[in-house]
Image (cartoon, rainbow, N blue to C red; front, side):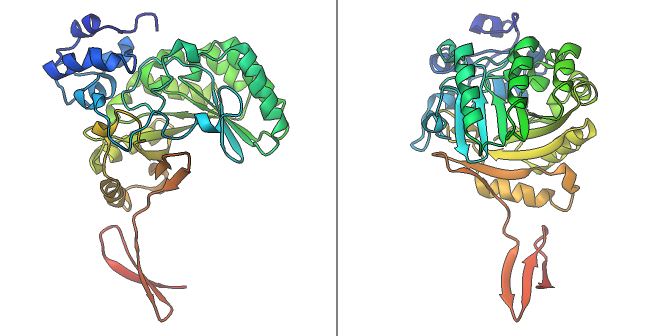
Length: 345
């Protein structure tokens, strides 16, 4: 973390930037900070502007343009925030924003408005208020630790937070959302896993978007989380233009995730956040990709393709429409190849 690349000069010494990347850097930095861990930098092709890792981390001119549908807070997290740092949008679960810091600031981030802003740093007094809210809201069955990246916190801080949550009787499960297995896998230490293991069961949701991100070091960090931390690991990806918007890339990603012990969980349609339109894949294309994958891969390899509705409406599945018609008690469907077939009710 102390050696993150954060300036244009540092980046230019490591990557052969295009003129458009260079010109976009300073302007984009006024809206959203730049940060790149040396590890994630090592995954970037320094000569290829189309490198899928490079596109996720380095500003491009499209980020400076704003479409009419793009907003700072697409999921309306701030309007569903009863106490600082807690978003309570679904009845049975709440998201707890614990850190404003990430190893890499992804250019498509839905929290660009606040991630990397030190004024958004949650303090111990904010944590106390959040815990009191969780205690009084008995409909909350799940708490999701998020940020920033919650694994930015120390082992002692995480241990204290998890202990407090585990004392609340109506909380059924705890989820930790982190991208550090992808961008900073050396953070997954034996000490961290020891803390996690004492609070079994826990669920860790990480964020691999491309097969190139599943390195030997990333895979070993996942193995450590599972074997030493005793956690279940899931993955949520974002469907990103020019990065993973074809079935062959996603097929390989899903296979590799399962091979290292991760269940593909969600494939997100890119949120309508300011500056994200360069990453957006049309939903029709997304459904076509999922149709191409269905029948080729085991169900354990397939995530659910979803859209988190702008304005705080929550997630809805974007499933291909296989149903054709019903006639005389027979239901006609088509399979992933478009071949029709009938079933009885």
